Length: 189
View 1 (cartoon, helix red, strand yellow):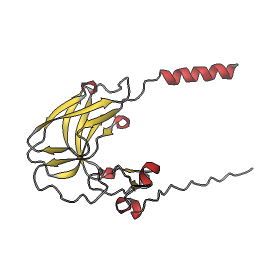
View 2 (cartoon, helix red, strand yellow; view 1 turned 90 degrees about the horizontal axis):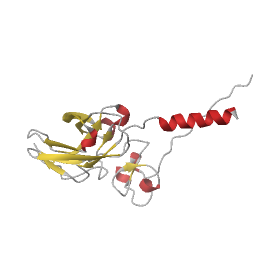
View 3 (tube, one colour; view 1 turned 45 degrees about the horizontal axis):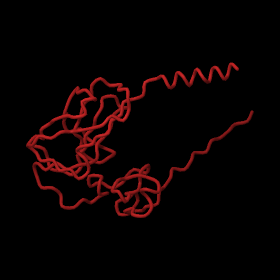
View 4 (tube, helix red, strand yellow; view 1 turned 90 degrees about the vertical axis):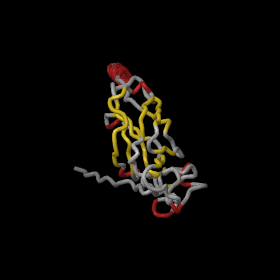
């Protein structure tokens, strides 16, 4: 009886804890081309409620998925329930196909947009020499090794089976290489 009461108490406490904030950026999305010197709206949805952050930052990032580098802060200390942030792309922004937006302040809450293009200083690359929706980058992470039919890196049947692009996948193959389980040694006394 005591174990049952303790279990019920633990479940009540776990469900009463506030959930973490979550965001999903709607725009800009894959295929979006923003032009330097123009005004745009970044829009997002909330994926968890209640919110745990009273204010968030939106930051323009650039680079491969495993090394996104902050470029500049788009909006600072904005209420996450606003669901929109207006910004102007500076005229000096370098043209590239691997820009992304991050949203959030607390590390466990930060979310990223899909890759998009900014046309600014320099020409837009004519060739996307990577997984189509990964900003010209190949899938280099063994945890998401396959360039799937949807053009994103991932693992599992939706990515590594029919339609997978081995040319842009980790190791040049669509075979999902699962990490081998580590053996545990038990010592008997």
